[in-house]
Every structure is written in C-alpha cells, then in structure tokens.
Amino acid sequence: MAPLASPPLPSRAPAFLAALAIRSGRPPQLLSPSRSPLLSSGPAGCFLRAPLAPCTTARERRRDAVRTFSQADAAGQTPLSKTLSDLKDSCWRFLRPHTIRGTALGSIALVARALIENSHLINWWLLFKAFYGLVALICGNGYIVGINQIYDVAIDKVNKPYLPIAAGDLSVESAWLLVILFAIAGFSIVVSNFGPFITSLYCLGLFLGTIYSVPPFRLKKYPVAAFLIIATVRGFLLNFGVYYATRAALGLTFQWRYQISTLATKLGVRNIAFLGSGLLVANYIAAIAVAFLMPQAFRRSVMVPVHVILAAGLIFQTWVLEQAKYTKDAISQYYRFVWNLFYAEYIFFPLI
Image (cartoon, rainbow, N blue to C red; front, side, top):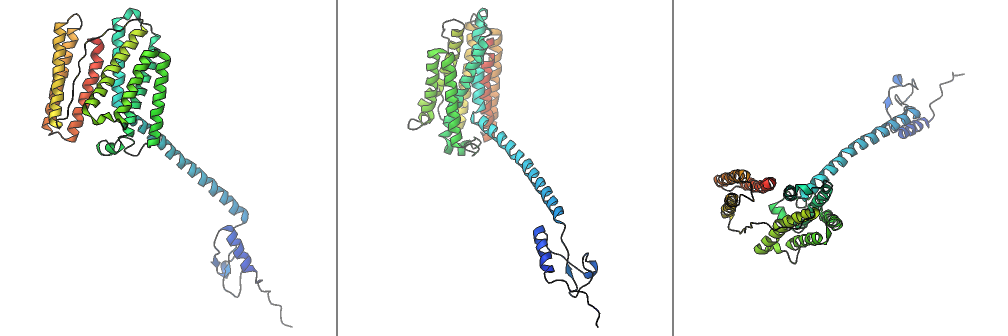
C-alpha cells in the first residue's frame, strides 16, 4: 500500500484569503513557501499571506479617523479667524476713517468750546449725552459715505479700487444692510436724546447725503450743487447742530459766530492745488489779522503762531507737490496734509 500523501490545500483557501484581504483594505501579498507563516510548502511555489487580524485593522481605522477629524477641525479654525478679520477690515474701510476723524474732532472741539465758555454750568453727567451724540454723528457719516460707495462702484473700481465694494471684499447687499443699520441707529439716538429740532437737522443731513449720490438726483454730477451739499452738511449742519445741542444741554440759547466759506472749481490738477493752497493761506492770514483786530474775542498768543506755522507748512507742501510734478503719490501726500490742516483747526479751536 502506498503511503498516504499530505492532503492538498482546499481550493477555496485562496478565495478565502483574498476576501479577508479585501475586507481589511490591504492588497494581498505573495510570499515564497519558505517565508509563509501558515504554509511551508506547496505545489504552486508561492501563497497568499494572511492579512492582519480584524481587531488590529479596526483599531487602526479608528485612530486614522480621529486623526483626520482633528486635522480638519484645526484647519477650519484658521479660515474662520481670517474671515472675521477680513470682514472687520472691510467694514472699517467702508466707513472711510478719515471722514470719521473729521467728524469726531469737529464735534469734540465744538463741545469743548461751549464748555470752556460756560465752565460754571458744566454737568459731568452730560458727557454721556455727548457720547451718544458722537455715536449718532458717526452713524450718519457712515450712512452718507456708504450710500455714495454703493452707487459709485464702477467709478471706484478705477479711481479708488481699494474701497471694499470696488475691491470685491464687501457685497452690495452687505453694504445696504450696513447703511440701513447706520441710519436707523443714528436716528434712534437723536430722536430719543436731542429733541425735535436737532432731529430735523439730522434728517436733513441724511436727506442731502442721499440725493448727493442716489439716482435720479445724483447731484454730485453738478459742481455747484455738490459744493452746496458738502458745505451745508460738513460746514453748517455739523458745526451748528453740535454747538446748538451743547448750549441747549447747558440751558443756554444759541449765539451766531463769524464763519468763512470757500468755493472749489475744477481747473486741472496744478491750478486746483495752487487755488486751494492760496485760499487756505488767505484764510490763515485773515485769522492772524482778526487776532489783532478783535483781541477781546481771540487769544492772540495762540491764534497768531499756530496759523503762521500752518500757513508755512501748507506753502512748503505745495512746493513739494510742484517739484514732484504732480505724481499720484505726491498728490495723495498733499491731499492728506490738507486733511491734517483741517484736523489741526479743530484741535486748536478750544484754545483760541
């Protein structure tokens, strides 16, 4: 009788091992018979290696999933923080900060002047009311400059591409939401704190700011109408309204003061620069003369040297602009300097 031969590997074994490999997510690997952990020999010369145990594979899968979710969560925090930062920057640029500085300095200077003139009537609780008024003015300012940007997108893409709507950083829908919130907040503060007269002046300012930019009026297209609106809102309503409201809060009636107004026309970059500088220098000379003619109304020791320094600085800046041949950077520097002169007048106003 022939010796019994070793039984052959069942034909279903390769399929069984392949199925385990598929379930484990790992491709089957071929090994030589001498290195096979399960089989030491066989006619095929090589065999499928058994996959890792199912429990080990499950643990690895859970570990990979936890690692993946942790990485996704960490990656998601940075875009959110960046989005909030970008939104804050867009809203701040939408408010046109240089106009806010003018509004804030103007109102603070006028309030300070009224308080200095009537220091015996000062009630420190009125500071809260003054703060509310400043917030209302900033809201009104935000509404006016915002509505202008909404209707000037095509122009700003050429002239002021850094503005948020023109740059695509702020949608028109979001801009509309902001200007509506500014208008509602400002009106609510004024109507609840400053009475019907100041409320009517505030509403007049919002109305003039609207027809300045919004079709079909869009009065900014007409030089004289545009000048009258800017002079009325910035030169009259702001100064008159703040000073009137301050004196009313102190229980005093309003008193008129001397005012100076100027007219700007379009004559080209160089001519505009010389005309604007000439008018401002003449304004400073007049202020110096008034200090000598009306010593009872102004402090000559402050009025004269301050306006001499401002006039000299303006003349020098105009010369720099001329030497630079009116390049874009030089014009921007000159423009910023004129704004700084405007702020300086408000800073020194309570002292003169």
